[in-house]
Amino acid sequence: MSADPLVVVDRLQTHFPVRRGLLRRVIGNVQAVDGVSFSIAKRRTLGLVGESGCGKTTVGRSILRLVEPTGGDVRFAGVSVPGRNAADLRALRRRMQIVFQDPYGSLNPRMTVRGILEEGLVIHRMGDAQERLTRMRRALDRTGMTAGALERYPHEFSGGQRQRIAIARALVLEPEFLVLDEPISALDVSIQAQVVNLLVELREQLGLTYLFISHDLSVVEYVSDDVAVMYLGRIVERADAAALYRAPLHPYTLALFSAVPSIDPARRRRRILLTGDVPSPSRPPRGCRFHPRCPLAESVCREVDPPETTLDGHLVHCHVAARELEQAAGDVQAVAARIAAAMVAASAKPASDAAPASGTLGM
View 1 (cartoon, rainbow, N blue to C red):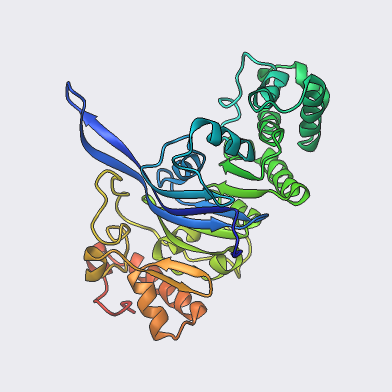
View 2: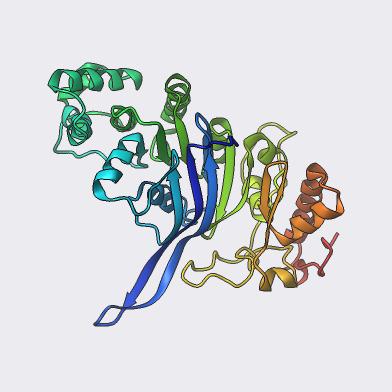
């Protein structure tokens, strides 16, 4: 990571109150995001992955304050985003934009493409009518659309074209940072590669910085410089993309990556099947949040929140991985192979036999 990152997220929390009864009293909180920290250097892409419901989208929206954070801090270009007044926040949002997941729901069907693209320019008072038209045409051209699209409505375009228009809407303000919230998941497979390649080209041409949120691990590997893995509102592992895909250390990351199909025998992983359901974010388990589903969980995992262990920029929150790294003198490749083998062996055993004794990997 750069010593002077563009985006810094520090212990971000976003909790949603649970209300019940006639008086709508608060009886608890859904801890959608709970203590997330990371930074993104200029012109780099951080991929954020995890199961549905782990809090990925809430992180992206909290950074932009589309959802109000409960705690923590977000700094953009050295400026703290939480607590900004409306005028300051409007100025910041011109430099930070988002591309939503659903191109069918994110574009107003009652507005022409001209109206959709021009709305942000008018709000931010960027240029006169002619200059706004020039900016809109340039944004459409950058996304592979023609100026003729300006007078048409969203329903006249395909899903891939609508997503290009959504990207153009973000680009028209000439931002520095884009939150890409599963930008290809609603598209046909034949169109996904086109949009992904477009995003990569735009990053190189315009010097953009991305937070790329997705559950498609293959796409994340292709697009991202760094990758963070989320589980139940927290980041459990983060590293350079190549290092993480080569040697994942957290048991959840290993299980997640094992589900990715590959035609390359050298990269194919033994499937690791997790048992049980994801705990409720309104009642997260004590200790490590992954321990109810982890075949390597030990007694300490059930009682103590795992510390942050960092080695050569590879961060992991796991008692087992931390101990193994210490015993292996920091040999990440050897530890990753050992934990993967233990995971495969443990997941093949009955649930009653899966948990290893404390201090061992049960091999």
